[in-house]
Amino acid sequence: MNILIATGRLAENTVRNAAGKKADVLVVDIDIAAFITPRKLLRTFLSEKPAGKYDLILVPGLVPGDFSEVERELGCRVRLGPKHAYDLGFVLSFAETLEFSRTTPACELLADVRREKALELLEESEEKARPLLTLGKVKLGGEARMKVMGEIVGATELDPEALREKLETFIARGVDIIDLGASLNTGPGQVRKTVDLTRFLCRKGIPISIDTLDPELLREGVEAGVDLVLSLNGSNLEAAGPAVAKAGIAAVVLPDDGESLESLIKNIEAAKRLGIEKLIADPVLDPVGHGITGSIVRYHEFHRLYPEIPVFFGAGNVTELLDVDTIGVNALLCGIGAEVGASILFTPEFSDKAQGSILELKTASEMMLLSRIRESSPKDLGLDLLRIKEKRRRPDKALPEKTIRAKAAKNWRTDPAGPIRIGIIPDRIKGSGGLIVAEHEKAVITGEKAGEVMDTLLEMKLVSRLDHAAYLGRELKKAELALCFSRSYAQDDTF
Image (cartoon, rainbow, N blue to C red):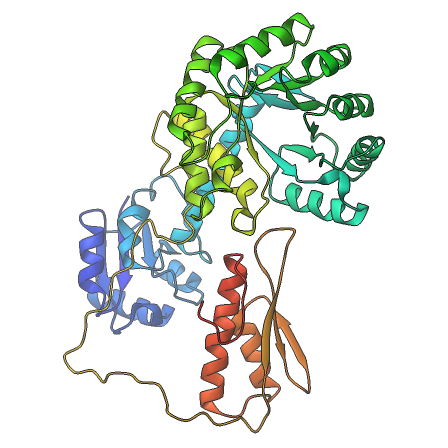
């Protein structure tokens, strides 16, 4: 395929280096490539008369305008390339297999295409997967994707509205299994009531587990129709095990105190003797500083001895007790889990710092499955967990010879149009996003983007000073970033 890339004078060298021998370059009579118009492109092409007949002309991804007349005149397609020249090499490698767009920059189009293909592959793989066992329609172990279990801590103590909100939050974040935590204060009847309400509120198909060591509460959960009990060990096996076996539901089995492999195996064998067929083993993942390395070895050894038994992997044991952003931690734990045979990835999302762990583990589990299918490292998959750092860095600005050192103004003057208070209302269901709120005595403006809110404030003439407008722009952008990263926001505080 013969490809011509249109650019401006300032980006010529960058574009030529990025394109290499994959495409020819046409320098339009303009400095900034993003300002190329259909007329300028056509005029330059006809005057330069580049050699050869082209199948495709790529213009910068930020260029607006209708190039259909150029296409008719030159007899070839004109499409949007990437927004930035440094992405050209990557984009050009798809020119033979992908139809670029007139409206969507190629870099965004490729991201969408790769993600769609990744999701299609995941869906196809899950449909064909042969599991070790199932909870309703949810496949566990074997060739299936690792499933994410979210615990609603103290679920039996929550009022119906609080339980509904927690369920909606977990479901929106992609949870596969709902775990109902029973507190120490849980009394008779509360488990049944909570299970019944959860079943009513929860969308069909999501398995429900009861989380307690109390045999009476476990039996009540079984009678209420849970799909899974969490957990059985030497303290409750004889009292609750027969009810679990009779109901034919799944059970997570723990080791007794000491968390030894021998204790776990002993309890697994005891559960089998009681007739429990759907067994899930929890070798117990210890926190950092409390034996995490030994526990990972324990997981590896159990999976080697019992490859036919699904494994429960308590990622939340680590993330809740580690003051580190959970995104990378959850991804790494998920990768370790995949290597030690994990079938269930568990998180309670209990602390503020661990919010979003369900979505992080879900995405990481999809990445690990794609990695296994493609026999590759978990990179360049179409899915990723890059939220702060970049995969490819944009070129940095060179420092000009003459600069003026910036400094803050000494005095602050009140805007005659009046003060504006800024705050945020997070979307607690989705876990990210929400509304920016700008309060003026004449009106309250809300919006999802800083630019939208600022434009409205200016349009309504609620801002009259340039320094006030600059200040509001900074604060509104901080508020938008806080929503994006699920952070709290306070006006004038450092973000």
